[in-house]
Image (cartoon, rainbow, N blue to C red; front, side):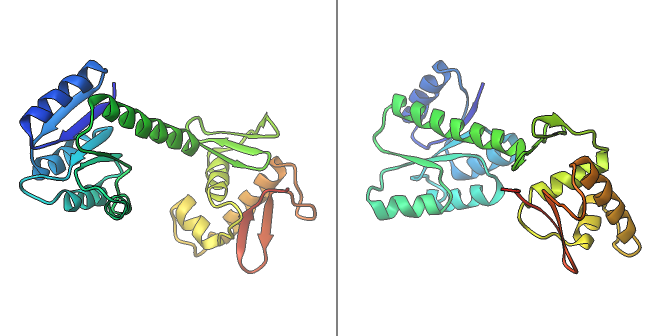
Length: 227
């Protein structure tokens, strides 16, 4: 069940929203100050925050910036401040969505569902990398080429995933050694070349006829879409 943190200083509004959100299946924590809201975000990592901007201890916009500085949790701001300029300022400060007071529980539920769907979609996309016919399932650590599973060692997969996450970008050998192997570059040049050779063979390529894996002489390596 999604967890919702409600930061609202009006006790009547807070009580009504807790009931509405709980009936809809959410697990709700409710606090009345910005300081308590910041503490809850840091300690409990809710799935979404509903943040009232009219708080007694700290301006809501400042609380928004502080939350966004510590967490990427989706934040819906509840504001009585109308006008396009104010809304743009809040979105630029890190809000994911907003509701304008007064608002109904049904509207808030719809906004929460929308930001959670966007969040879930972004996470699903982050679970896979695709470069042309190559696909990497990051959760299962499986790589396929043209739909066929590749038999990769752990380090070959790590190397391929690192390059795939930086598709069409030249990555230096030194960066590969330091970030994939986690060791100093000095003396490790041959390790990179050997693994690149093995990886190229498993991708069905040769140095003379590269498809996905390209060597940029004197610069580094890159993974490209052959199309």
